[in-house]
Amino acid sequence: MSKILVIGAGGVSSVAVHKMAQLIAAGNGTFGEILLASRTLSKCEAIAESVKQRTGVAITTAQIDADDVPALTALIEQEKPDLVVNLALPYQDLPIMDACLATGTDYLDTANYEPRDEAKFEYKWQWDYHDRFKDAGIMALLGSGFDPGVTSVFTCWLKKHHFDRIDTLDILDCNGGDHGQHFATNFNPEINIREVTANSRHWEKGQWVEGPPLTQKQEFDFEAVGPKNMYLMYHEEIESLKTHLPEIQRIRFWMTFGDAYLTHLAVLQNVGMTRIDPVMYEGREIIPLQFLKAVLPEPASLGETTKGNTNIGVIATGVKDGVEKTLYVKNICSHEAAYEETGNQGVSYTTGVPAMIGAAMMLSGQWRGKGVFNMEEFDPDPFMEMLNQHGLPWTLEELEAPLAF
Image 1 (cartoon, one colour):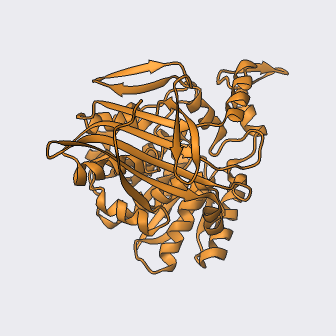
Image 2: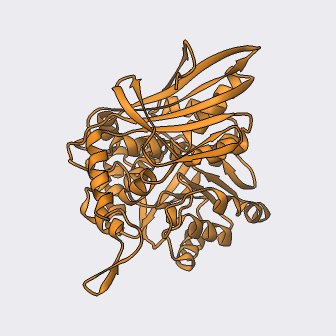
Image 3: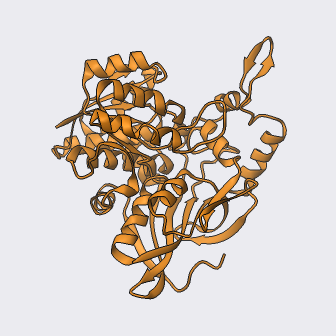
């Protein structure tokens, strides 16, 4: 049995730790000890209490600043985990990877690195660690959430079993939940708003196509949700998929937003509250977006009031035995069911469960390598099987024709 160090104490971390503890309680043998560490010890202790009540499994907690590489290195050396699962902020990916390198410890995360002072996220910074991880004989698995993560696994599973070649890929992310708030984000507000307000980018015929944010809109009828407006956005799995599956001619990412959300966001942008550069206030520098984060509802607090479903999947058009076809593989997740099981809403659930599964893939040896890897570089079958077993069942259907847009 393996020892896991989980860093971060938000909703995603809570779900991942609850799911790991379920396997411990069932005597699965993959996970043994769990240490949960974060800057705010009280959040770790609250998760530990919930895990104990729901599963009977006791986990330990610690306080750590994930930006402090020497302190994190010392914690890893003291505790000697088999795997570090980074569920903190994307800003902290590189410091945590540095600590894993210093201690020779495997690493997993759910979102790629993003510098604090620039709203830009890409894999280059983490891919640059490949040779160092390889030389150290350790493994890093990047993006083991839903998107990125499961969407890449869906794509590879379709390619393995249903296509000789995939020509176009559309990733559709719909959150049909209603939390009753005038304006709130379902994951870290700072990361969410930086992502949504960035220029759209998609991959087409060997090059990036860029445009203004939230300007390309399509309506789509999502099962278990209904018709929703979805908007073309940039998302990090486009970069990794076009790298590892270069045959795909076009890759697009779509996310749904309600009109009220977009109206609030436009106002906040217009008055400067989404800025990430410092401004002077009463003689000290503040970051407007960080202040906004402080006054918005904590995403982990939305679980009890959020009702409805998420619907996330991929639509691929390609060729099998000379015949073109379009397939749609997706998961529908109930916010209410997620909250009943783990005390967290569905957006946290759909990221936390794949984080647990990715960790299980590494610890069981089903996914192994030396260096830095993305999800689509491994066999999708055992991951797809665990999705069905652990709360994120998927369905496959053939569409009559490719998407008309």
